[in-house]
Length: 358
Image (cartoon, rainbow, N blue to C red; front, side, top):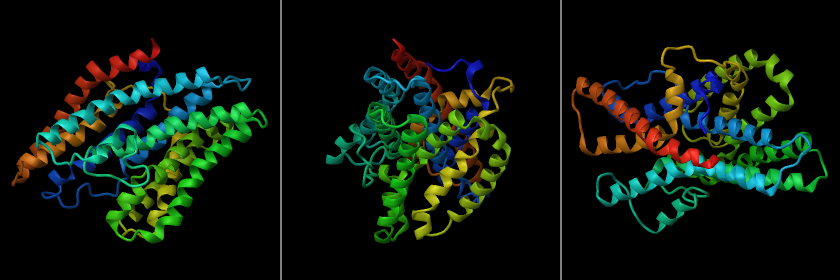
């Protein structure tokens, strides 16, 4: 179920809202940049990185909270955990997958329907190589779904071994695997990928190369629960360090696809986001009229899937020539995305998510 507004954490709503705004800015750049070539004028991170870290922090934290103090977590608990995540994520995913298939088949948006279509039903479209000719924004959901499946299973197996303490040994080892394996994979394959296009295909948007982004969120959740004094004491220092590091890393991202960009950059970027979390997690209540951050945060999942369709349709059919028309188009697309996402959230996403508790 959606959290009651009194239970929401304002700082995390800010991060989720910022994430979806950054995604929309990236996808709408084709509208505004011809009129304002330097837009958005400052280096900005990819909003998907914020979503990854936040997912690891929230979902990892839910799992840690669900494991009882005596270290017990049954197969029924595991099944219920995965079931709840699937009720939260799969309905919207498959809804927009079928919408994409229909629109591509009718020629409304660009795309290709071929033998690769089956991979989208098992989240294999970007497991070890990225397929880009359909439902392109789904790549991040594939990364997250593999996390939602693998992380609880690994935790369950480690609890069943009963040889070491879960919170201080098994869980840190699992988290270390999420952090180290993608980095090692990127290092080993970096020499064979030489172009910027291949950087997108074989590094930034693969399951095998991006699970560490979610891993840093899990690491933050571990610190919050088992190192609470450290979590609280250094939250402000960590926040300002994270902001400086994030700004620096965003400037570095303008470089060509160097060895650094293919390896350490994709490690340092989620790290810089993760160390923002202690401060943001301490900001509990939104006092703004209408609670706009909570509103955008709630519909952000629908916005993520909806925005690409809106922009693809726009780019397919509309070719504005004046600055005024571009600005109106920019605002109109954003309004349409928010409206459609709110309708989808209200009448599809939230009702189906509610079924997970029944």
